[in-house]
Amino acid sequence: MLLCVTANHKTAPFDLLERLSRTPDDLAGSLAEGSKGAVVLATCNRFEAYVDVEGTADEHDVARILSTVSDRSGIPADTLTASSSVHSGPRVVEHLFAVASGLESVVSGEGEIAGQVRRALTSARKHGTTSPELERLFQRASEAQRKVKNDTALGRAGRSLVRLALELADSRIADWSAARVLLVGTGAYAAVTLATLRERGATDISVHSPSGRGAAFAAKHGIRALPKAEYARAAAHATIVITCTSAEHPVLDAAILRAGRGPALAALPPEATAAECPVPGHGSAGSAPSQLIVDLGMPRNVSPDVAEVEGVALLDLETIRLHAPLEELQATDAARSIVRAAAATFHEVGARESVTPAVVALRGHIFDLLEAEIERARRRGDEDGRVEQAMRHLAGVLLHTPTSRAHELAAQGRGAEFIAAVETLYGLTAEPAAQRDSAQDDAATA
Image (cartoon, rainbow, N blue to C red; front, side, top):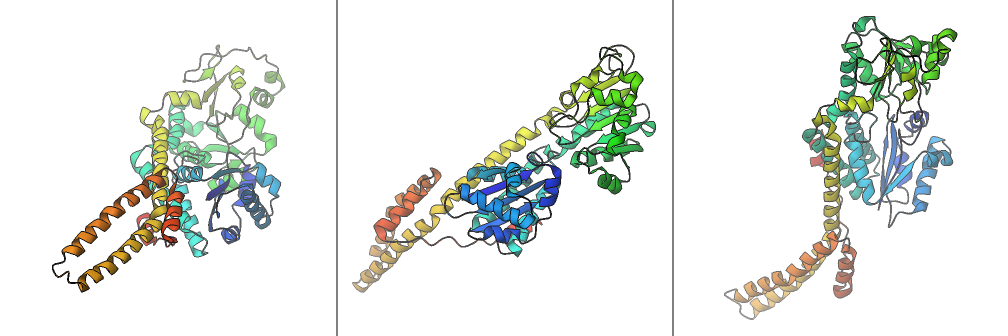
């Protein structure tokens, strides 16, 4: 049975994921010990161990996997347990298909993960840790990803939210080159946002990372990193603040803005008013707002109370999505439908293949008996071949029903009943299918 233990941006802090991304190359080999095979997918935003276990997976298998990862990474097992989720059986297939298609990424539809999934399989092959079922799983995941990419707008959906947010901000920003921009967050959305800001002409861009990754991000992209001590003041005086972190709690609220403005402005009551916001979003009534805050976080990065601060307008994902093209809004639903259909096909094909060795064994047994009887008929004088023809026809008729029944039972998840019946009635033990030749799939994904 297939088993997946995953830690990702939804379940684990980024510093833990960063440590997991540096796991040894031969970790899959350690995980494969006592199992049929293992494939490890480790990126900056997720760690996943796919293991093909003997028999039915249980809590002992999960504990063994976590213990092995703990030993090889130096991360305590209880920390891994608290930061991981587990998928088993059919759920593993749909999960990997969704991961490969970008549905589980920080930026929905990002394409880099597809290559990472393929490289994970290549690495497992290199270390000899794959199994026939893991080969089939990862190959079909790549097929599902290509169909999602070709048949939906998912690849544009996540990035379009950034573009659309800045288009809506255009009515507030007269000159992007003169705007003071504060970017809060350093993940995939942040990189896309930074690139889009520069396309619009923004040059005065600073970054703050609540998780402490700002310096590395700033050095990589040539911008200034703000230490925690400067965050409140920078947030209060920026022309536009764009938040895009995976934090589970707000990283910006009214108290931070008021503190950053200094004692005089911080003392203003919440009901201090500002004019109606000229961009779609939330804002107070009164004089025209002088600052725009764009919240691209999911869950929310910004507390709704910032809209109560004088001169502040808040533009969040809910409002941005109202202006998104219908095709792009529907892209995720369409992609998930493709993933579910591909997973269903995977299970159906797998079920049929599970009984194939037994069907082959039964047909081989019957045809061996048939050839022996035909030879006897020839020795008795079946010169015109009519007896042989009749016997071959009879064999085909006799095999049709059990073959069809085998596939029906397999589709119902009862393939083991057919395998047991063949062994009981004929004394035949089906040989497991040989590992598939993956050269054709490699060529298709190159």
